[in-house]
Image (cartoon, rainbow, N blue to C red; front, side):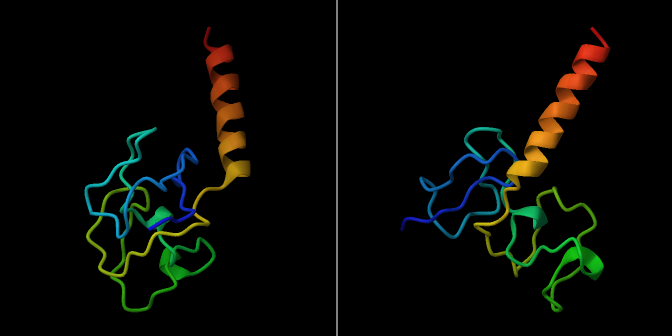
Length: 98
């Protein structure tokens, strides 16, 4: 089944992976786990516990692999603007410590 989901961390297309993702699936590009809060449809940094699903247990580390039964991968998880800012900060730090 084709889908438009991209890795929340690097933006790499995950169309080659079948849904639902297994708990151990990783991004083929950056090798981060995909079953994480920041990759989920219910993740929302603006609400308490950063989750819009009331029945879900709290997960403190939003980028860590978890066992949440409510996990549903989101096509909106990747934030290109946030990635650009992160890349710029990394380059500035590398230049500072050369």
